[in-house]
Length: 78
Image (cartoon, rainbow, N blue to C red; front, side, top):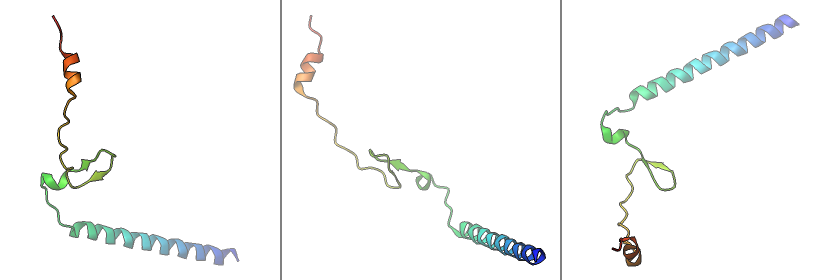
């Protein structure tokens, strides 16, 4: 009975190996079919204030206005 189990296990392993090779080949072909452009803009990634990565640049934020009280206290007096 052990011979039958051994051959069954061997067949299962062979099928699994064949299936994995087929999937690997399909992935390889899919990668080659994707268009490649070596442009810098396609390779850039942006990070927002929350740490999320995106392909689009963030919108510029308006500059912050300083408080007039802070400007007076920062100046040195003679």
